[in-house]
Image (cartoon, rainbow, N blue to C red):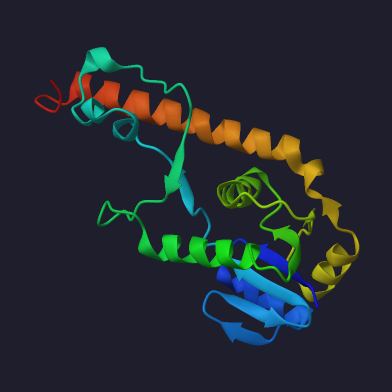
Length: 197
């Protein structure tokens, strides 16, 4: 029996999807049953590298090093804001999703993150880092209600139809990073005495 793996944006939506799809067995990081596996992210699991991840010398802010634009924008598991280390919860959940996606009995993927640029980027980065090559669909709903989910599951779109929204979302992510990284550093160097060299 083949399973369809469904990726939600957050645990509460995954629980709703699992209830509607009758995937009633609760496991660590996912639900399973009735031909479905429903898993979830915690919003963004990935973030863009910091400037210092590309070049260690960027750890020391020096005004003449800005603006800084890497040749290629790279991603990493998001950082825990308190510890400044890799977010262990995000890393664990990504590894659960990866293991599920690579199961031999998973024959189809459905992305069920929010239907907007941010939701597309959240899912796109997960699938990109896993590198799946299985039939992949997209559910489009306005609200995660029983009726909307049922209707959406009957009208799945091919993931290729979401490419322009994914590209727009990633472009916005990169622009936000470029503006934030450069203007924050430049403004700090210019106006906060003693902060930069």
